[in-house]
Image (cartoon, rainbow, N blue to C red; front, side):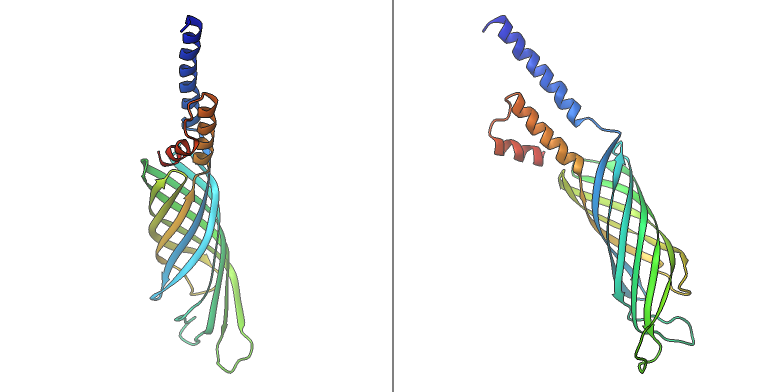
Length: 226
């Protein structure tokens, strides 16, 4: 082997390592998308709040996103006060939120964090006060709430995980007098890591460029499962 060829091979190994480190470096911010499903408890019943959020995580430590959530369900046990009882009660809750989370442990397969969410939107309660009524009455009002708790995420694949949260919800403002969703909630979500997807695609292209790909299928599996 000529000295020129050896020098070129040595340079390629060094450059491949430098390019690889550049791809996997920790960035100041990277995008995240999360599908969310919260189960909140009220008067012995459970209600499901569905939603999603989108934003970024900074230095793999602090997550900041905007979310949208909604609930539409029948309430089985709800009285406005001692004088009236609501019948055929249907609640619709819609709100946007500012979601933050401090990640204090971030390993390959598991991460733990402390999420805090500030939400504001609208409550709408449709009801009757007598079974003989034909049309329902409707109450509408502004609602503001805060959620906080402890989160844990299991990441069998770096692209996608399974996230669980247990926490407490506190109603700050609710224009529908006497109705609050205060209490314990649990949440299940599917975090999708767009940066990890982009990183694996770039690493696949880099290996191909430096002729280190080998079997393309095996290389793709190794990148995903690493």
